[in-house]
Image (cartoon, rainbow, N blue to C red; front, side, top):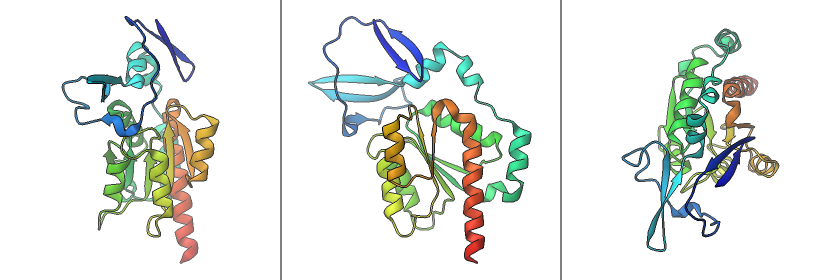
Length: 223
């Protein structure tokens, strides 16, 4: 039995054998089959030593085992409505989301919708998010990004955005399964304005509102 701990939740996996613990390179992750016939609990296929290794969506498994976790993902709608009043029409704000887990991506969209934010562009990884952001004519007011993703991870995406003269003022929320101190430090070092862990999904709306309000005030000050 392999015991894995995820945000203070322990889960046991019954296995036939354990060869060794492998270090995974994001370039090895094949997401072409994600969300297809592999099912909702497999994120990636890793080709190694003439074998296909399936990488599971641990977050989805934890919520399947303990459904009460997903039930916590609701917000105080009246409070959110009051907080967003100074922002005006919320559909005018376009939010870019980079998250590789289909389940978490869906939950982010649902929580933001509860807060009144429906103008979302959902991307499966940092590379897709960067491609959307850098497409001529595409304008966004805020970026929410996971950390661990294939092709381009969230920290690299944040650094790329903050180093770009056109996009550097875009507010960024780094959104991770486990926000360890080293990840917090790295997120801050690359310029992320806010950080939140996935168990704190309901608080995401507060972070979004606060950053959009700050951005709005900054634009007023420039005028």
